[in-house]
Each structure stands twice: as C-alpha cells, then as structure tokens.
Image (tube, rainbow, N blue to C red; front, side):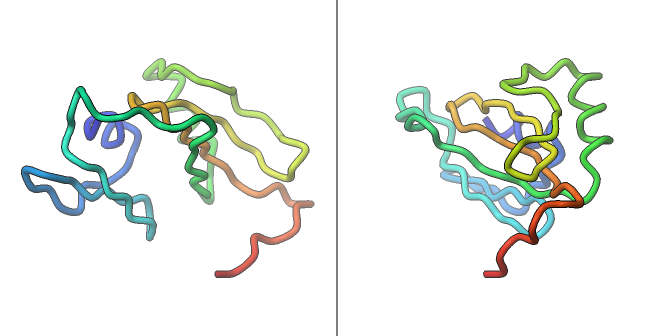
Length: 107
C-alpha cells in the first residue's frame, strides 16, 4: 500500500514497523502496517487532494498507466479532477478549482 502512494507523488514522512506517515503538501495521512486481513474501505470513502497544477500529475498518471475511476474532466461541482482507487478501496480524487468556482471554505 505504501508504495502505491509513493509512486503517485506522496512523500514519506516517517515509518516504523506498525505504521507509516505520508504527506501531500501540508496534508499528512496515517497508514497502518500492511495487513492482508485488514478491513477494506467502506463504500464512498475518498480523499480529495487539491493541487495547484493538475495537468503534470494527469500526464504522469497516463504515462504510468495508473488505472482510473474517472478521467480528467471539468465537473459540474466546480473542479477539474480525476480519480483512482488505492489497493484498500479508498478513492483518491486529485483536483483543482475551476476559475468560476467559489473558493474553498477556510478551516
């Protein structure tokens, strides 16, 4: 599982025998140790990863022939995005806001 994320551009922040932490920009994700008996993701589990420039990432995905759930497209909800599933069933949606989209709410 960890290799899946590293191949897609996440960076490894920390790893031990029991878990690994990877990051995309300022977002950190925790992954438990790989366990073939671990539960799979529930239906509709997903991560939206906002990026400044989506086109280089999309080209990389095509070059490496990563299996896609949805190809790169403008969506009616104001994002240009594409999505794929990780080996545990979580959807990763890489996106950037379209110019006419309202800004993301601050947290």
